[in-house]
Length: 118
Image (cartoon, rainbow, N blue to C red):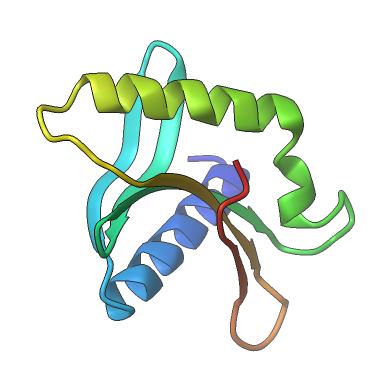
């Protein structure tokens, strides 16, 4: 696996663990369909949340959250729709969150959780 991919997977594992520690239920990790992939699908209480995780080692190419463009949000909305179609269960409340993870050279990861971005 490429170093870039391993950085991304590390960020996803970190975020999934933090969400579970906050009482969220992670329903899916790396759910794929022909349209693409959802990093995490989770329940925050009764609310279904698709979580896009962006991880960077530094800000040389911009902050992690800057990688979530309008086009990416549109794709995430289509992916959430595809995921919902694959489920029997209904959800009244749905949102898209972004977790921006920065992995500094030393010290703990910095996680910024942006709720309801899409």
